[in-house]
Length: 526
Image 1 (cartoon, rainbow, N blue to C red):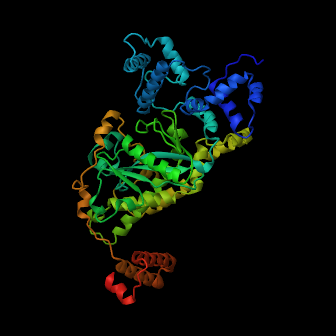
Image 2: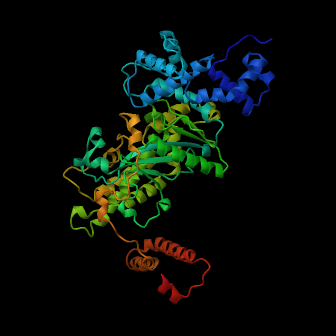
Image 3: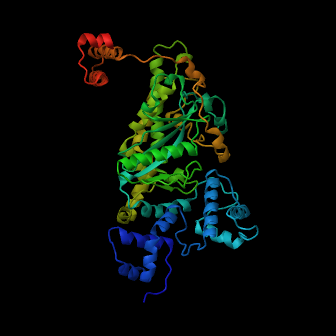
């Protein structure tokens, strides 16, 4: 008979993996290996989804017993959900405050006042269950705790081990001053980003890519106008990005929920099940029921160290975006008479966002995932101490792709002069790195800021942009002139223009369907 033995959460997950992955041990073999009874093995396997959920939500892997009564479990889950939301906003929490909130939740769940004490003993167990023991509950700074990072990296292989690299995704929001010129006088502190002209000229951009770098989801862009004037006669559903809007251009739970449900539908159509890793922001609901997308969340205040997209992808994206912005400035300078005539529209920004996202290479993405600690359990066991040291040196430095994009941006910046003091490429890229992407002050007020603007409420700068798109005939005539330019002085343009011309002709033929059209009709009807 097996010795009476209690397994920690960490050991239970190992047992579940031994049963399902690779080894496929029988219940008898598992009983012998973990020194527990066959009945205990059976119970663990029956509750494996529950244990996996605990593991994914960063519960303390050293805990041996769970709360048995339903009311206690509900209170515990509600308090921890509230705790993570407040900590994601860097709000310091004290022990007495957590206890008072627990008593409040208990009454909300129907307990009579005074029945649930939320004693000091309960608080100690709550902290132990959720791995809060190594954090300072009162007056904690926003600095990343190395112990939290190390704990997460040890836990991560077990979370991702059952997914292929193509099926592990990371999504992150970033703020973007989409009209910002490279002028040092434009630099503002974070507090100034919440109002004034800068806040009116910013977007929130959500980027999402998989671990292998082979699939980047269409960027989601949040502006403050539902239909800027430059969108006239444009089908928003055919934009190269997903366009959303609210009065603050912030992410909120409504927009995020709509986006993740759309991704779930896409994955269901492709018959794929994916894992999506997110930061622990209050606008990312943790209780969504999704059939083909599993959500796991980073511990609070750790994303700067362990979120893949924060390890270089977002900086590369912004470097490529701002390179296109500077190229636009250079191009407009050939015809503009004053700086006011260098106009940047929402449509320009959307195209640059899409192109900048496409420019980020799969190698860059793979390296950032690796730098963030994403390795399968099998890979981890193969790496020796020497290799760890080499990787540490390699991935703590800037990524080659990031250095390349910054170098190109520096060259472009040398062609423009916006003021007495010019920003460097790195300063230009990092200028909006810390601007808020959701309401950091009070999450409750987010719901009052999600009302979409009416079509008559537009960005003021876009009111002067009412340029009609060219017809197909006019576009084909433009390609003829570009061919002439290529023949006279720029031969490297030939291939690009030929591909564009071929695509335009294909679009015209598709628009006519199966109708036979003569050359005369082509010019008369277009």
